Length: 82
Image (cartoon, rainbow, N blue to C red; front, side, top):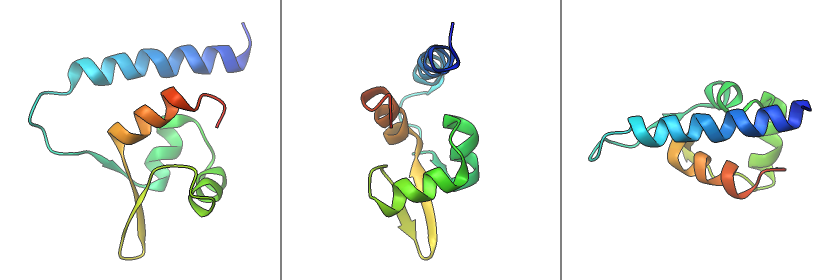
C-alpha cells in the first residue's frame, strides 16, 4: 500500500466518523490554518497557496482565515488529488 492510498483510506474513515458523531442542530465548526493542516495532512504553506488560488473553501474574519469543517470534508471527498 502506498502512502497516498493510506492517506485516502484514512480520510474516508475519518469522514465517516465525523459524519456519524456530528449531532443534528449543532453549530458550524471552524478550523484555523494550523488545525486544518493537521486535519487534512497538508502543510501550512500548501494551504496558504490554495487559499491564494481560491481552490479551497475558506472565509475571512478580519485578517484571519477560517475553514468550515463540513465544507472541507466535502472538498476532500470531491478533490482527492488537490
